[in-house]
Image (cartoon, rainbow, N blue to C red):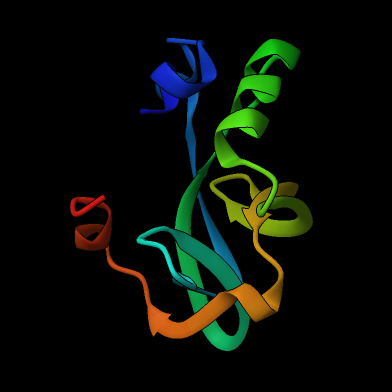
Length: 106
């Protein structure tokens, strides 16, 4: 999906595993999609990518106006790294955990 939506087939192969401490992945209200909320003692697995400007523009279009890029710090195999993640405003998030099976119903 990343390659298709970004228009860059190299991005999935260049992903670096990362963990976002202090957050939980929850459901975006009224959708089957995830978002992030601060949650002490929790962590979210993910990956780091470095999209080129065209891929970043495509990803912004894909994510839509409800998601914003939030600066944060993640833990990578090389240690803490400054990064950004797509997040909705807090009032748009449910407390219900998001599961990958939710997306299969979209």
